[in-house]
Length: 149
View (tube, rainbow, N blue to C red):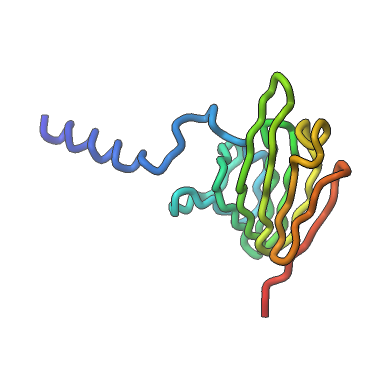
């Protein structure tokens, strides 16, 4: 009985940093090549296809890594090697297509294809770079941020 209680306590202790459920997910990892990590609540997780992505997740790709992510509004995010990205803000109402999106590209490269939020309300979508913020007014773009020397 003590082992059972201990097991339940350990299970619950390690679940504390995880989001409540997959319905809270902003999107899903669609494709992974090479080394890709998702840091959630300071816990690094190896990215895998089908993995949920949440607000505040930090996505890191290695020298051989790239990743494709689809958000719930059908925004497509692709990150190349040696990239670091944070999903700062994502809210989406599937009935009205209202919402907002803010992604920070800390380093590396990305390709961004606007989903339903950007098509309905382009000013609600932004990508933050080290020294600038890109307001999205079109449907797709590519960006690259080099590491500071």
